[in-house]
Amino acid sequence: MGHHAKNEQGRELTSSHFTDAELEAGRLLFAQESTFLLGVARLQQLPDDSLPEIAFAGRSNVGKSSLLNALTGRKSLARTSNTPGRTQQLNFFDLGHRLTLVDMPGYGFAKAPKAEVAAWTRLIRDYLRGRVGLRRLCLLIDARHGLKPVDREIMDLMEESAVVFQIVLTKCDKAKKLPQLIAATEKTVGEYRAGAPQVIATSSRQNLGIADLRAELAKLALDEALG
Ligand SMILES: Nc1nc2c(ncn2[C@@H]2O[C@H](COP(=O)(O)OP(=O)(O)OP(=O)(O)O)[C@@H](O)[C@H]2O)c(=O)[nH]1
Ligand SMILES: [Mg+2]
Image (cartoon, rainbow, N blue to C red; front, side, top):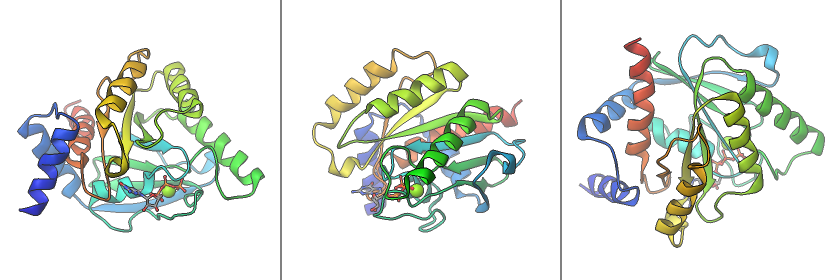
């Protein structure tokens, strides 16, 4: 019951635009087995992209790995940490042979040597620009901080690459003035043809908005299955 109540709260947070059928499709997809495929530090090592791919990007420490764990219902599928810079390569996960999920290193500040951060940044940009199988970028924004210039750079990059990006607000359990933040963020996203119009507000910690994001991503897997 408690779990149900939280999901209801999450749907209110995002004023859910999803039907019960879409939410159920999302639930079923993410109930499938998820497995770690491989970690990639250089573009030459990328796996084939025969499945539709969804990548999770955002500033260091925004909650990318935690969100992947919440989506898949696996506490430690992706490694998380208090220290910015935990995820140091592109980590690929298979979801039920229907989707590939990619946990990316954070951009911006990281507690790691400068040269390493520069190398990740290059890897991130090259991947986002050139990955043919990439169907959607989930761009994570900390709800306590909102969009930063580095996030706008990634949005510009997606616009150039014509890959749709989905803004996902994270850590909404800690956010103040969430409705205002959602409205302001959607206004900015509206300037981009590549921007998915609806911002999804989440908290991995409280399992808010996770069902909505599953529903949104399940549409991509289904589209592919229907050709
Ligand atoms: N309050 C709150 N904290 C969260 C939430 N999600 C993640 N965190 C915390 O944020 C910190 C960073 O989480 P990660 O998931 O490792 O973030 P990341 O974006 O993968 O970080 P890097 O890989 O280092 O770029 C951890 O201390 C998490 O516990 C959330 O929904 N609410
Ligand atoms: Mg991470």
